[in-house]
Length: 297
Image: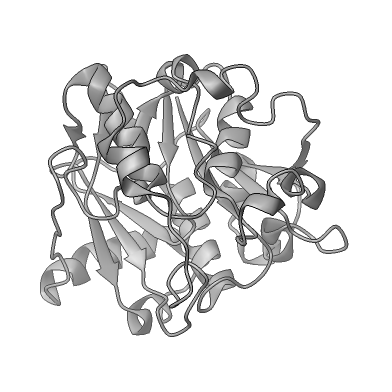
């Protein structure tokens, strides 16, 4: 079983966020098989607004609504971190909230983002691909999908979308795979990080000191690399297509952006566990509301 972990906020982050999120959620649901689940952590949306998935529920497929669990981390959660960052959404906190509350029956956690569309190269589902994988952690390539292409897709037809992208990847020569350092294999590894749930609990989740943005994915890869020696490669089995959204500058890409220290959190990491957060990662002592959309038309 797979628990897919995503996060976001009802704030129209980046270009045409509502459509990107609907495309992603619908297409992710299409490559999963029950009892897999999708966990979306709605982080720091103002209390008087609905969560992002609630705001776009009429654009989600029945399958997506059936698999989707929404965990609402309200502004009160963010208050304890606010003095340390100018960001309004904190990736490691949000991801850990989901991991802590993921189904214990899940072997795998897929950590990804709400602008990704996954296209299996073998079989028809991600569930099939991961079924017999040996222990470890795995990355897959990220390929850019231009705005004019994903904007033309009908978000209500995920099966057709996946088929179309599979064809266009070849015919339009989109499938340019960007490599990175050996310990992550591919550029932007955080868009597809398949990790054993037991490992995330054993090694205390994502590093919650990393509240300035960037390198959260490289940190977990470095830590798990200490355990397994190297990252597994799913590049022959699945591609992840990223819905590009650079028409609008975001806080993560603008000239005043902040970054977590690469040396501290990647180069100098020498152990997989984070003892300082062993007892409290993932807001374990907080009550987190859960919302379901199944049954909504």
